[in-house]
Each structure stands twice: as C-alpha cells, then as structure tokens.
Image 1 (tube, protein in one colour):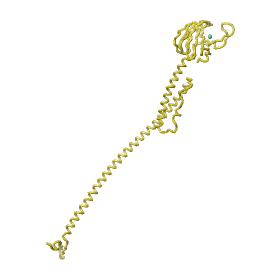
Image 2 (tube, protein in one colour):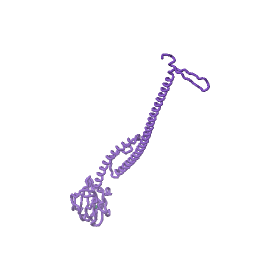
Image 3 (tube, rainbow, N blue to C red):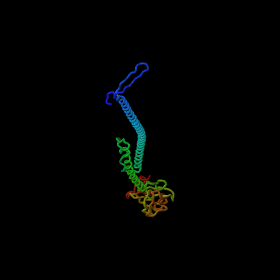
Image 4 (cartoon, rainbow, N blue to C red):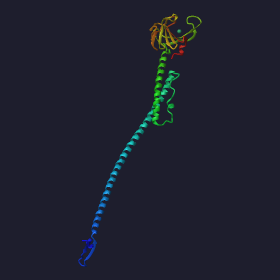
Length: 301
Ligand SMILES: [Zn+2]
C-alpha cells in the first residue's frame, strides 16, 4: 500500500511465437471506460426515448389534425349544401314573388275593368304594383318585405273596392233600366198626335203593346207607393226606386202588388190590359227623375 505501482494494471500479451509484451495502464482507465460506456448508453437511451416520445406525440397530433380537417371538410360540404338549398329557396321565393306581382297586376287590371263597367268614378285604387317596388331593390328579402306590404295594402284596397262594388251593384239594382214588358213599341216619349181628339199632346212615357194578361215587370228594385185606379191611367202601379227615380205602369188588367210592398227588379207586378183611357191592350210606362218625366228609352237597356 502507498506505492505508485499499486495504482497501475499490467496487461500481458502472450503470442505463440514472439516474445511476451507487457502493457502498463493506469488502474482507473477501465473504470473510466466502463463509466463512459454506461454514460453514453444512458444518453443514447434517453435520446431514443425522447425521439420515440416526440414522434408518437407528433403522430397523435397529426392524426388529430387529419380528423379535424375531415370534420371541417364535412362541415364545408354541409355548408355548401345549405348554401345551395338557400339559393334554391331564394330562387323559388323570387319566382313566387314575381308570380304574385303578376297576379296583383292582373287583379289591378280586373279591378280597373270592373270599375269601368260599374261606372265607379273615384276608385280607391291609387297605385299599381310597379310603382310600389322600386327597381333598385334586388335583395330578395327586401323585395319580399315590400311585396308583403303591397299585398296588405292591396287587401285593404280590395276590401274598399268590394264595398264600393256592392254599393254600386245595390244602386244599379234600383235603377229602372229593365224593359217592363215584352211587346211592340207603339208610341214613344214626346209630342204626338192626340189619339183621342184633335191636335197634339205630349206623351210622358212609352207604350208597349201585347195581349191582355202579359206579365208586367218592375223595371228596378223599389217600394210600391201607389197601386189602384188613377183616372185615365186605369189600374196603375207607381214604384219609388230611390235616388230620385220613380216608374209608373198604367192600363193594367190586374195588379199583383200593394202599397208598401218591396219589389225586386224583374218581379211580376201586374198583368197587361186596357183599363182607363186606352185604345187597346198595352202598357203605358213612365220614368220620372227628380219629379220630372224623362224619356224611358234613354234609360232602358
Ligand atoms: Zn202611353
């Protein structure tokens, strides 16, 4: 102990032929080599572990990303489908709205025609559809909103229009414009030769000749204000139609209504005859407007 030689290791190499060789190495060298090998091994092991770990991590991350991409692609596909569906819906709505516009225009036209036919002078209809939708509106939702408002407006307009029409039709029912009997027009309104004497006499109505018992119709809807014998007129009926109109039916053989009766246009009110000052079976028919006799031919259809 304590000597320098003790810290050395002697390695002897003994070949078969040549002489023995001695190698002197320090005793710590093998320990160092062993320790180094262990250290390097551990390092390599650590590196391998780290690489493996990070690789598996990366792989996991990669797989996550792949599935995320797949999900996004799926979502994208769904979005595209949704967009396609919405586009189709929009197209459908636009074509529907165009259809509605067309229908509204047709209604407008029909309304105008009806107004003309019924003779309504001041229609409530003030606007057409084209004027209601400004051309700059191209977004379907805006267009549909405008269309909705237009439809609501149109509905109100049509309600007013229908009211006016009903009023108009009710009025037209009262206008005495229906021929009161079938027959031959034998005398017109105006000056004529006096059939019962000399000179001319003003004829305040028209004469329609046919056989005794021919139906006499009310020329318009109204209320019977006279039903009885009236001097030269013979058996007579007078109807008040309102709005200043009155009609008179004379020379009847038979009266079928009485004072106070409400009669409809076309209702049979009497039978033709020759009562009163008459030269033969005929109807003497007068129309009065605001108390004055007017030419029945100007009003009869
Ligand atoms: Zn007459």
